[in-house]
Every structure is written in C-alpha cells, then in structure tokens.
Image (tube, rainbow, N blue to C red; front, side):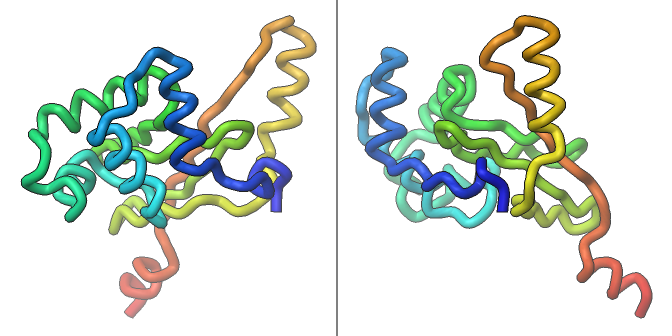
Length: 153
C-alpha cells in the first residue's frame, strides 16, 4: 500500500477544523454532509447526498448543493467528473490523495489501493519547475470484472 494511503483518514472534526480555518462556519448542514461522505465506502453523487437518510427532508436540497460547491472550491471535497456520468464527491483527506478506477459500463468506482505512479513524476516536476504544493488527480476507466464476465456469458 502506498505511503499516501497508509496515513490515517481525517476525522470529521479535523475536516471541520480545516473548513473553519478557511472561513466556513460550523453548521448542522456542514457537519451532516461531511458525516455522510465520511461514512460512505465510495464517492457519492450530489443526489445520493441529498437523498441520504441524514439529510432527506431535513434540509433544502439547494443548500446542500451550494455546500458541495463551496467545499469543492475550498479543496475539502474532490469532484470526480467521470466522463458522461453524474459528478461524484469524496473527501480530500489532508496529506493524502486518492486515485480511482471507474467501470465505463456500470459506473462502479473503486479507490486504487496501490503506490501512485505519478508521485515520483510530481516530485520531479516540482523540482524542475519550482512549483510548490503540487497535486494531481488520477482516474482510470475500464470495464470491471463483473461487467466483463457478463459480456462473455
């Protein structure tokens, strides 16, 4: 497992502290949205978040959508574009990054639990360019084993 994946995940309180350091207020909506994302075992669509039992009927969907946009703008959330599919959101944990593989047939999203091949390149780019705080997002697309087996049957 990669060093970036071996760091412990941030707690909701740590993420809220990051939000507060960026000028965001600690609100019920903020806490609940972050808790929903923290408990998910995969990235969620905005609709998944709005329809979650913790938020459905308890908060105006427009407020949740605005919160997602703000959290993405502040670097707290990562938005996965996933080509023609709906955007999915995941927490950006401090001092880590996540790379994903996405099935182009069923939409399954899995986090890659392996050394990131781009980290060495990123360090080289930083060294040669003088840029600091480099970051990258890596998404692979293909057909998952389940869909592959189905198409062969």
